Image (cartoon, rainbow, N blue to C red; front, top):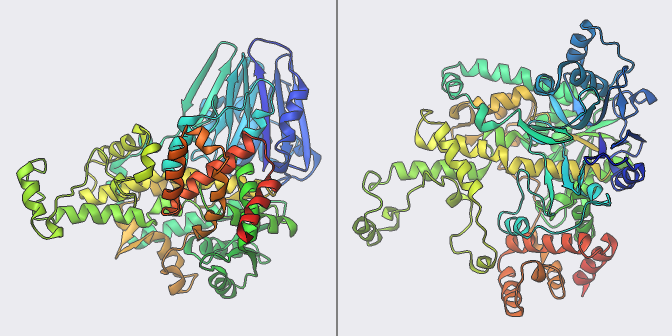
Length: 631
């Protein structure tokens, strides 16, 4: 919807609105329709508006309460704002617009952050200044659909929707965080508070900060692990399947409906997969003139034909956006620039291309299918965890002492199916992510990352008493993905959409559906060898059977294009960042040619570093990549 930026001079120096202007200049793409700035003695707030609800000037931000004591800059949509508005009107609040922004502002002003924020059903990040209490509240939605970054330096707290906005503030230095970059090189993403910049952190999803002159209080109002109710999962298993299917179909239809609230043109991204196709089918119920978009990446398996078939079935026009190899290479540096960090997903560029096509056609809002796989068990690696634990349960040595060296030695003399390779309760997932224990050249980079291992163990312990061990492992893997993998997808959606002034919305990530996904039983998620069972069942009345049960493609993009970036390592930034010797650089270059996934991770860091640390332009880098293609 928008971009926000601002700061609080904790030493009470006067706020410099020129600093806010400079920050907003970096994120004008997030909201090209309007700009607003507010300041008092020590606080500056800025807003770039993408007009979606109430296109009039009444939606201008910063939004200020009638008593002039509450001020907000807000990014996102709270879909249950009509219900909240009715409650506030009963308490005497008089509204001057039809925006959700004003409802969020008065909910905070009337009820306080502790009561108001958990009530919000939607995607949001905001900064709310309460002058009555002399405190600033920064907040993000439950699963982190909308971003918010913070830096505290030189007695100034600086915040914004994108890191580049923070870097435009004179008190925020641009310094790489080598530990974070090392984690990215291994794990391909950064989670939680971590960013690739030293001194800049991300607000955790589901959290808010309360800032005063002398204190910062951090509150997690939503946490998947903490808020999981094991008894509800057990009860879920005893419910009638047809009742569950009908209930989920009703909730999902309503979620799509409220996600379509817009006074601006709206479309869907329809890849032909079950999630985006289901969203498109339901959205058609509420908008007869619906259109959809699909990327056809020429270096990968085409989704265009499948998507067009879905479009014909639903009577929805499908606009195909072709992305060839040269376009992919030119878009790569742009995707890194708009993302503020090394690219996580190779399909970032395809999504950026689709967003720009939507922008050219006058679209402002796009519905996408993220969240379904994490919430309802759709990924192959979740099934891999299930099969590994199930396989161990059936292993003839499963009940023996696995640490006995003689038992291990005897097992190696037998056929491979008898070898001892038991799952580890202390680290229940890491063996099953497709990464070998022998990481070869990655030993130069391998970090200590205890949080990832600890989280898996905690989810397994939390699910004690829920089904068999393999069912617990499957459910735990999905819950864990809500922390890590989903956050990276939502970051991609926000950045690649906002780069073209497009707001992406995710109907699967809605409070009622999040709650159902957290507490759905194993059988509702995985049945007859199929993940996302309940999602597929509600799709059967709307989509062809073979579309629903086709193998998952997942926005495919071949990594073959990455090799054209490899020459950038010579004279590049990565060897200095990781302090490689000339011999290590040569060794790593040879290793990367054999491992395209790691090559993608490393070269994404190289492109990011050239943009943000060396100051090269996206155009120059894109041209270099294309020259490598044709040389």
